[in-house]
Image (cartoon, rainbow, N blue to C red; front, side, top):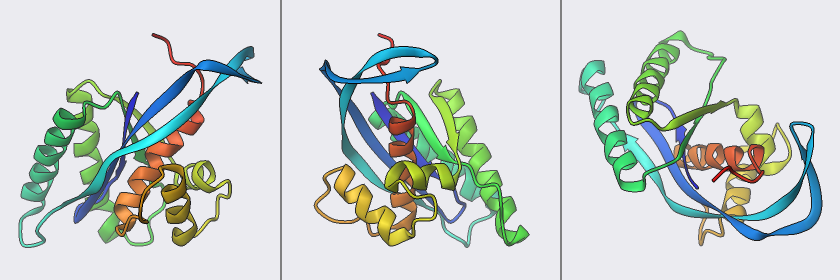
Length: 181
């Protein structure tokens, strides 16, 4: 399964793509999923790529949103994700940043829907908890855990790309049960 994580923004859209590989041999531990006991399958996550879509602040918002759409289309075509996991930001300190981020998120959701990619939204608290086990973890802790969980050679430099990888990891951990074939 290929999961594309997205951290929305107008200036920068962070993206991270991971492959979730499940061991076909069930482990001895058992989990409850939707009230049913199922054997767990161990999983491994591998990063396929990450980075940022950056837009020029000299362009109009419409042109910047168009670039986000075009670049995300290219990424979806390249990686062929099964799922798009996006950070859902509920609280903004500044209305000036809330509107552009919301517009960018709308374009991202539209692009994924148009390409028939399933969309899942997660709060920052859910992402931090899934990645570190602690909902108030700081950026440094999150980045270090992402490096460990994905077996990366170095910590992602960009906060936006790290947040996107965190969203992808969050999906893999929340939906950690055997997928239907």
